[in-house]
Amino acid sequence: MVKKVLAAATLVSALSISVLAMRTGAESGIKVGEYVSAFHPHHISGPHKGTDACPPCTYGALPAVQVWVNGDDIANVEKVAKLLNDRVGDWNKSKFKAFFIFVTDGAKKADTTKMIETVVGKVNAKIPMAWIDKTDGAIKDYKVNTDGAVKNTIFVYKDKQVQTKFVNFEATKDGLAKLTTAIDSVNK
Image (cartoon, rainbow, N blue to C red):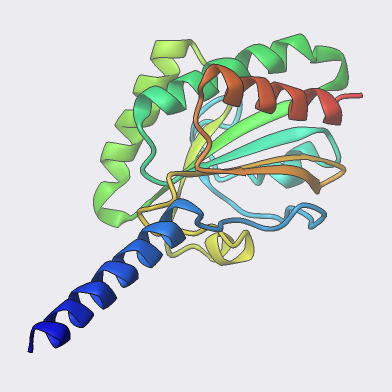
């Protein structure tokens, strides 16, 4: 009997570790080398405020960064937004673009809008920030993982082809340096 209990406890422990490992190494987003496609988020800030303008359609082949936010910590979002806002200004000649898409649902759209407005105000962001419902076809097209273990997915691309991707990006000094390097590589 004791052996059966120990065996069961070991199995539960092993499964828990496997689930934790899957969550921390979660996959999200289209792969490097694949192409971004049209979608229509609801813009809360930036030049398309109040519209459902398609960012890839609007910006065409220009170098860009898409940040898909799925429940990320607001402090992390603010750090990424500040960096991208600054980088868009730095790369005016290349017309580099950056934008955020917050994944939400019907019940949370008002709260998501308030969070976006808070981020915009806090970092004086000029870059577009929008939300998209988690049932929108773009979630499937972009293969964005909406599991709670995935807080964000970032695509860095040029000519609509993804060059670099980050999942669960952390805006640490090292993380921001890696994102900056990725941005610089598409702006050459």
